[in-house]
Image (cartoon, rainbow, N blue to C red):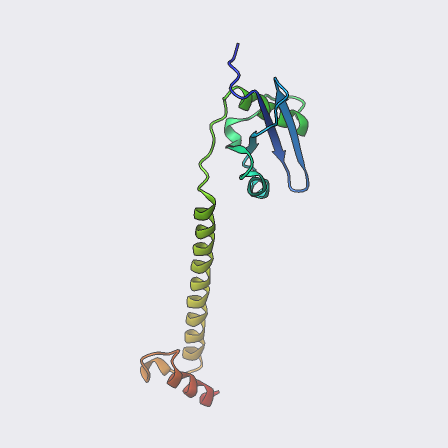
Length: 154
């Protein structure tokens, strides 16, 4: 017989438009231990709402596959809860909230920098194709002087 690690826990099966939660319990305490699959990005919203009030284990789907057969969302949620109740779900690492927020900001900044560089290259190519070789006249193609020259040439 398997040892019960969590007396009461919840298994959550998350989909794009709905969530199925099943509580597995051996006593009548409040449920603070939750296990959910990291399916796409749908888990992030639920995680963000519950992270301050619950102990969440984010499971990699390949480690919590249910046995083949009549698969339903309720059975998947119950399977997650049962596995978690016995401590059989290895949790994925999730950085602390402040690290996640900083990471999101840095990724967005990187994306904006790449877009800016891409647009500068596109303008440079357009000028070259239009026989405006401004880069041979000024040191900064996007400086004040070059902007005045381009405006005059157009």
